Length: 150
Image 1: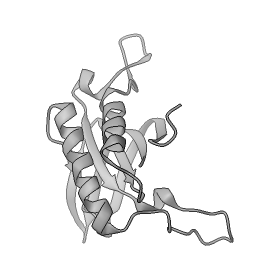
Image 2 (image 1 turned 90 degrees about the horizontal axis):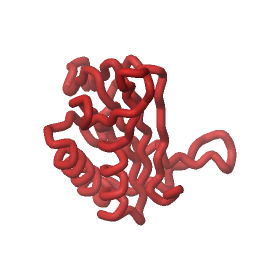
Image 3 (image 1 turned 60 degrees about the vertical axis):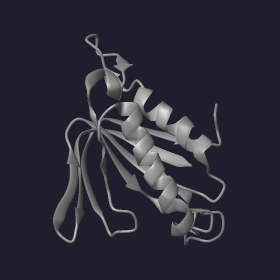
């Protein structure tokens, strides 16, 4: 499982010209799922996500987590995080899990994130054609792959 985290001033999801989710200060999280992901990957990434110290303290040092500042989280499914560009110029998505496998894991990822955060999170709609808007704060963008725990 892979996540791309962006610290944002605000972010929103638009589907069919209607805003379906939005947050203020917090984290926009793109989630990609592959066939060998499991509850262990969810546990690892959700713990990292809610405890990641990427917000400034009173000294301007990134020392506070989403939980510390009561920030919001917006989670969006993104199979393209598993794009392979090894051959040619057209990405292959063969490594991304099919919806019948990835939807339950995505939903569990969202549930676990909310549980660990201690409040509801906001989400995109799995498989929908979403338009994502954001104002990146910093910018701060962090990539975490649950298979690369270093």
